[in-house]
Amino acid sequence: MFEIKIRDDFSAAHHLRDYPGNCERPHGHNWSVEVAVFCERLDSLGMGIDFREVKGALKEVLRELDHHNLNEIPPFAQRNPSSENIAVYIFEEMARRIDRPGIKISAVTVCETPRSCVTYYGPKS
Ligand SMILES: Nc1nc2c(c(=O)[nH]1)N=C([C@H](O)[C@H](O)COP(=O)(O)OP(=O)(O)OP(=O)(O)O)CN2
Ligand SMILES: [Zn+2]
Figure 1 (cartoon, rainbow, N blue to C red):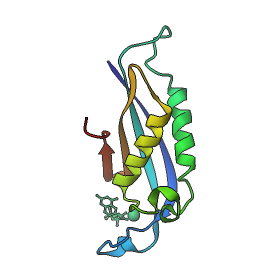
Figure 2 (cartoon, helix red, strand yellow):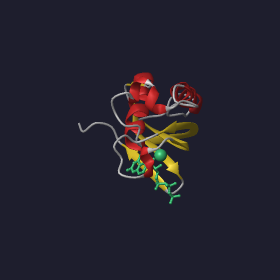
Figure 3 (tube, protein in one colour):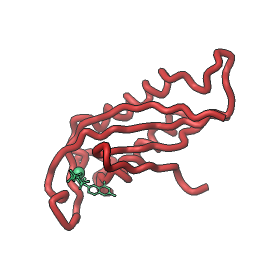
Figure 4 (cartoon, rainbow, N blue to C red):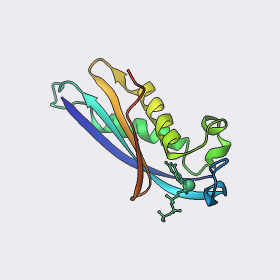
């Protein structure tokens, strides 16, 4: 069994609705994102999944977030753009793109700073 990890980042503005403090005011972060993909076996090239496929899918997903005000885009119209909810969104979008026998998204980690991160492991099965 293997776990392949790809990292990328995006910059965006957000505010946390109803937050009891200054995060309720608009501000920005350079979020870093790590996607982990679980692979049961290796293909004929000796790869679990090509890094390039995961990188490409992650770029596509992050393009929808990069340089936006997250509160103004559909995924966060109803739910707060917390790092937790951003991780869920990225997980679901990645799973739509990469999910086949023996290959599954296993975790998405989102960091607002190198000191503040959250990891989502997918829905309880
Ligand atoms: N569990 C979570 N807690 C917080 C989130 C979150 O998404 N999930 N988000 C925030 C705010 O986005 C806030 O902007 C970040 O606050 P903080 O980590 O305190 O960062 P600061 O830059 O304000 O402080 P440093 O001391 O420089 O780290 C809050 N909480
Ligand atoms: Zn913030």
